[in-house]
Length: 271
Ligand SMILES: Nc1ncnc2c1ncn2[C@@H]1O[C@H](COP(=O)(O)OP(=O)(O)O)[C@@H](O)[C@H]1O
Ligand SMILES: CC(=O)N[C@@H](CCC(=O)OP(=O)(O)O)C(=O)O
Image 1 (cartoon, rainbow, N blue to C red):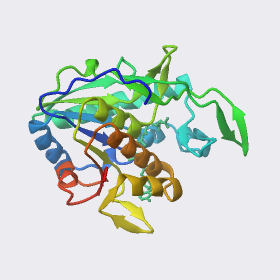
Image 2: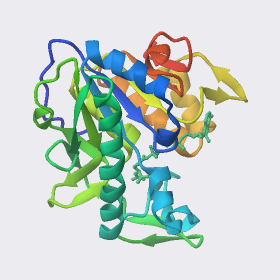
Image 3: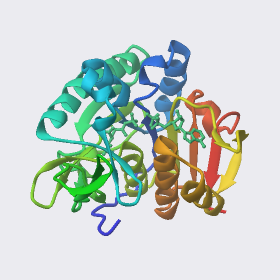
Image 4: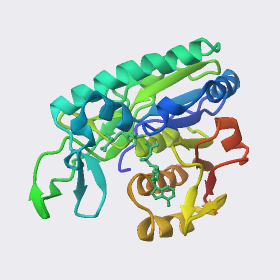
């Protein structure tokens, strides 16, 4: 990240939990009970994705053309102003659901758009593969270049923040960004100890085998050789979070305290 306007370490370091769009609908009551218990004692910052809710909104989000690939093989949603509106529509609804689930368990929460001063984006990639050709096109996505923690306010146990990871670029335009990498940037900027990436698989798999623990270097090697799609982004996000001072990144599908205790999931650390 080239620029980070930050950083105010809260008295108690927060846990950042990224709720994957792949699994948000499938997390059951006991999963939310566990998250609320954790949130009673630790400031929680939740960052959500929207891939599955968007597919429910319209079948066009299930078409292969909804996702573009850049020169380096990285995948991104093809994002127009209309897509940003759809993202906001589904995020408002799922935000209400998440806030309701936490409220009924005694944890208050408020929702913020990353584009409301929290997440800053740089110039987006201009060349994308379409119909087996690299073409220049405007895609409203951008890499994260900074996080200003001020809009998060004072972080405290018992009151969570839910971030919709849109961002704003230098020209003032609202852009889409990757949710895992936004969570990593926010974790780094807020001094979080742990970043938990909750998704629809229980572990990172290497050669079909679940990985319980892996160092950042080995994870980066696998990312460049063997990881695809969503997992490739998670491993990139994990490396970025560790580089910014986060101590542990955990990827998995279990309740958050089980992932933090390393009872389940893949724990990624610097060494
Ligand atoms: N090596 C791997 N280990 C585990 N999952 C992988 C791997 N490579 C690719 N994946 C895929 O990554 C997906 C999780 O990423 P993604 O679909 O983006 O989820 P989310 O919406 O939770 O961010 C899994 O469902 C799986 O299909
Ligand atoms: C630029 C880009 O592609 N952004 C992602 C951000 C949401 C996300 O990552 O959601 P999941 O948690 O469901 O994967 C997207 O629009 O799908």
